[in-house]
Image (cartoon, rainbow, N blue to C red; front, side):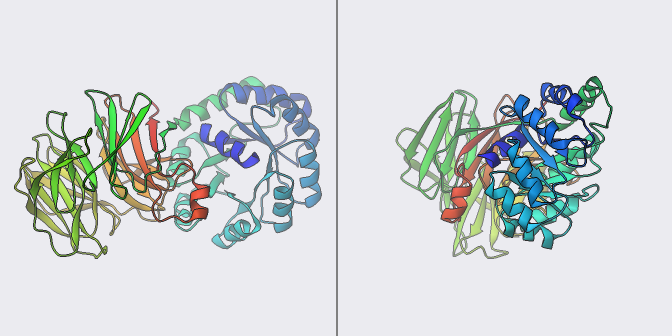
Length: 480
């Protein structure tokens, strides 16, 4: 229960207020200012004046609305005294297995500090699910690199040297939140001054709203499209051969007579077009029938995997080898549903998400972890350039979509998040999908909201138990 409350508070606002030096007399007024501005987690380091008295007062006043805890917890005796106050969070600057074990046994959330991967994994072995990188200033690459090997569901909090200007880069690197100390509160600072600083930090968060719209427990949720005519999101689960639809809170599933691996809409926005084993077809959402259109003579062992449509109605379809052999993937183009399908690029690994601009075709190659940009003139493609290789980021790039503002967003399979990629390849924003690990694909509606599909595939029973929202559809309202 404590861990769930901590995760929910962090998801609401990825900030932990570190109130070093605060006194019992001023604590309630200062924390009220933090709460009013949207901060939901606060810790009182134990080298503050009368810290347990302060913590007890804060728990009594805010315990049902905030996560209150202590910092600089160094001994088992301090853990016990902290638990007696009713606090939930136990923060330490180091990894001490005895302190961690006592915190877990007393229902507290331990948050030990680490510097190296060895320390991080020692803390995990002792029973933690949250880690504190300290000090974290300038260590975004370290956060991203460690995330690539951390167990699913592990959260890293960056502490030390954070500013509102560095917040975005730390979150994009994979930090679940940051601890803010002297930039938010210094001893003797008035509640009004703390309020102004808290307001600046909350503005810097610019947090999107992420909600689970429906969980049909898809084995693989793929190919989402937004149909503006009726405000519906439609996508497929090729493993179960199922078409899924969500509209205004009402959801449905329709069995398909042929497994479909991706969807797009016809140029008029009314017909569903899907790709199957070696061709494209029109999908009847009511009967589940797939009317075959153009087919292609794919190489042995290959199948179609993902697709998109350009502004002229042309269809672009990626093919992959079923054994994930490098160099066997290819890209095909058809001027219409009836074809013909023509090979336009080859030598790929696993072509996945695509996004079209008037002069570019952006393509994810999941196997090589590349986002490629092909110069495009109609249906002719030039030599591609690598936009980014997602270096040191957890997971593999999968589906992709272009937002109304022109930015590219990529779903990270095994990374539990979606990423916004800048024009030069920089990762500009990271949005976590709580309670799930394999992010499959995404699309945007005409109001700018993002719809994200996820998957349960290739996860053990224990992993699925730790990711209860796997296979669900998420709606993300991006911050203005």
